[in-house]
Length: 448
Image (cartoon, rainbow, N blue to C red; front, side, top):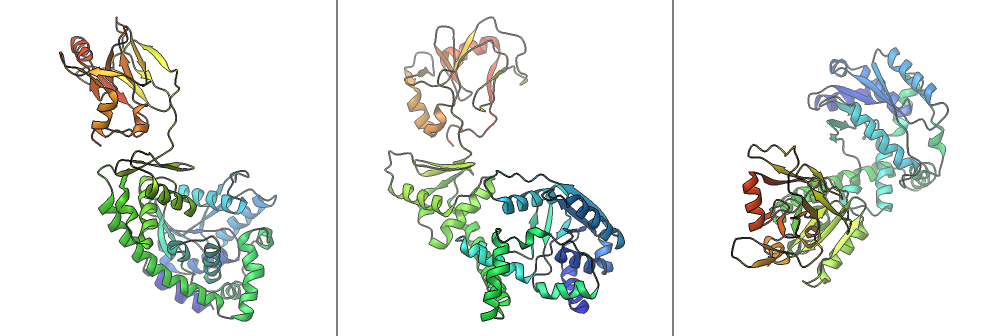
C-alpha cells in the first residue's frame, strides 16, 4: 500500500502547475494519510508543504483536536496553521452544508497566491457525492462530482486520492500506525452523507461489490460530457449576450437546445457574480418569457438575484431596493446622499471637484411621480420623461430610481446626469458647474 500511494501521488504531483502546496488537514484518517504520504515526497516538501486546519468549534473537544493536529504536523516537520470559524446554526443550509461553506471560505482566505491546497477525498467520497447529486436532481456538472483540480480562491483545489478507496487509505494508516482524530459526527446518520455511507452504500456493495468504482467511473464519463457542454455554453453565451454584460437576448436563449439552456444561464450569472436559481426557478423563467405578452414585464426572483425582461432582453441584477415614495430633499449643491443605495448626487467644477460651499439658490431633489416633462432646448416643446426613457431604452424599473433636480419653483432642471433641461443648462453654465451622479449600484445608461 505504501508503494501504491506513492505511485498515485508522485505523478499527480509532477503534473501540478507551479505553486506552494498545502493540505486541508482535519486530523481524520483521510487527511492524515494524505499529509503523511506527501511529507514522504521531497518534491512536495520542496513546494513548502504545510498543513491548514479549520476548527469549526462545534464540539467541546475541538481545541484538543487542533492541538493534536499541530503535534502530528510537528512530528512530520511540517508547518501548521489553524483557523477558527463560527458555523451559523440558522443559515437555512443545514449544519453539514453550513460547516462545509465556512470551511471552504476559511481555507480560501488562508491560501497564499497561487497556492495549491490538497483535499483527501477518495473514491468512496466520489461515489457518495454522485448519489447525493443524483438525489438532489443535479445536471451533468453536478453528477460529474469532484474535479481532480479546479480553481479555489486565489489558488487551486487538488484531489489526488480520487482513485483510491477508503479501505486502501485505512490499510496505509494502520501499516504506518498513524494516530488520527475520530470525529463522532461521522457516525451520525442525521447527515445525508453519513446516511449514504453507513446504510446505503454497504447494501449496494453487497449486491454490486464494484459499486464505488463503477459510480466513480460514471462520474469520469459525465465529467467529459460536462466539460464539452460547458465549452459549448461559453460559445453560445458569447453569441446571445447583449452589449451590456448584464443582458441576454431572451428569444435566442429560449431557442437553445435543452442541454445548453440551463448551462448558459448559470454561466452568465456566475460571470456576473450573482447567485444561481433552482431548477424550479429556471422553469418559471422559461414559462414567463415564453408566455408573457410584449406589453408585460416578467420578473423571476430568488435570494440575491432577479431577472427582468424588457423589450428583447433579459436583465440580471441584484434585487432592487425601492425608493421611498415621499423622499424629497432641499439641496444646496454640496454632495447629497440618496436613498435606496443610489449613491451620491454632486455638482462639480471643470476639474471634476465636488462643490464644497453651498449655493445661494436652493434646489430640490426627488424621484419620479409620473407626468414629469423636460424642455431640452430653448424654444422647444416639453418632452414627457416617459418618452425620453423609452427612446433611451431605460428599463421601467430603473426610471423611478433616477434622481430629478428641480428649482425652487418646481421646474425640472435635470434628470440625474442623463439629461439637462434648457433652464438647468442656463443655470449650471452660469455657475460653471456640472451635474454628476455617483451611484453605488449598477444603473441603466441611455442607449444601453
